[in-house]
Length: 439
Length: 181
Image (cartoon, rainbow over all chains, first blue to last red; front, side, top):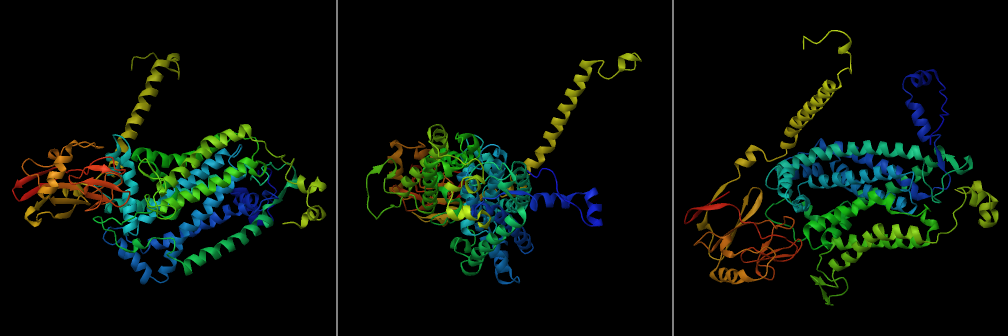
């Protein structure tokens, strides 16, 4: 979308550099003069917030490694050393640990934004898939990072997740031994997790560059889902998007700081302050909050291999989404039925998250038994997670493909600017009076 | 090849089959070389020699009183050595004919004439948590993570685990000593 470059080197040194490495031109065309749809709402600022999260995690992570010891005998003690002895170690560790949660909050908002406004639809399929790749890399990175403090919960979390690969027929046991580098999660496992936890963020940064590149080729989607058609539909990135993203980042940093300074352990599990002991399992193993929906899907299926397949399938659905949604209308703003199902989908994901945090056999409502169905009582979290998981898959595999064929959509505006500029009668009075005064 | 006619015939592409052979041979050699150099990078992840060297241990059974269980760490995992009471053995044998997910006779899980000694890897066959003794519906082990119930022989009876608790390779060196692994 950058199109013809409008960059004019002003000084001699700029002209000299521009003829040799036009990097200032690249920055100018991508982040200053870049045309941005004029109707982007605040759901669109999470891309910038995510860049901030990645930078924060990289910087705090590189510093933590200067004090951390990747050894089964010393890892736990070195984290305590960071917390008690290293100058501001507590702050940097809390920024890193809570920063991971902030990263996932932002990525989930960013993904749901894309889902609602149809940002995965042609021509943005590759952009969407690159985003899914980033999400997968984030999951792997977060999981391996969580194991490094060598606490009870993180150690046994690693045992459970690596054992998932044992569900594969024939090769399962050899694969788990290979992943562990021994007969169980031990020092060798910790060391390779540490190595990969340091590597993967740089791979994420690489895919982020591809993601932004793909974004700048096809251009940003917008709440109407209509491509920009004229200059009236867009605004230059700077100052409009820059200032707006800066404001959103400031608000986001207030949330981040609230967790770091007032609730630093709210999102972690207290069992992780007990050193890992392979001979005793915590009574209830739960992953970090951002994995709970997938953990609930895993536990919803009574068969081990099928449970693993369902969990990975839940993520695979995201990759296939551009071809699962058959609707010609991009934004759900003009798709009333799809909008309703989207809201139920978000609720189903939240229910799955709740189920993942609870014991499967515990009752959902009160402490009474209803009818036993299969292996559990109907009034139990395992059955609730089954219903929610069923909706999760139905949304991708049945509802979206089917709705695209039968749904009666609302009229889509001709262009981004047209509801405001070309049809005064259809727009609110104050919008017609002074369109340029509106944010 | 010294006899090859000098001149027009030696031009590039003049002998297609010979050129194809060179292409195929070169690609094959490159693929073989890539596979050969990839293997050390894959195999380095497998258990190292010192890990494998620690793979076997000896244990003195006089440390386990009747009806008790001792947990050792073996290959990084818990190992249960259980001195079963006659009632537990009886219950395990009586259940041999019950319907099971991973059918196995109790006699196949212990050494002949040593039915009271049960040696198990204390790692749930579902996702590797450590089951605790004395819980569950079958008088054996119960896994707190995802609710698998094991009987007094360590066989899976209820819950998501697909297999019985594994019996490691072991042998009796004497009446009071076993070698595990």
